[in-house]
Amino acid sequence: MRLDKYLKVSRLVKRRTVAKELAANGRILVNGSVAKPSTMIKINDIIQITFGARTTAFQVLELMDHVRKNDATIMYTMVDVIDEKL
Image (cartoon, rainbow, N blue to C red; front, side):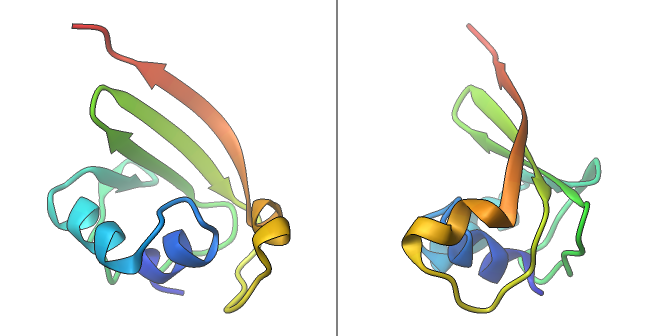
């Protein structure tokens, strides 16, 4: 599954276009490497997303094309949160 679609379906990012912009600006890492929106995601990959000064890491648990809002959290687990205070 593509990174931008995974982020939207799992509701880690609200819109797919926002996920594309984050990836295009180098703010998303997959397994420690800068990811493009088209990067293919596999189960057990680690995705790091940087929002401002906060970096959050998630581990991919499930890949699904459609999921209910209440069930979106079964697709990932939070691994780490890093706050960089300026």
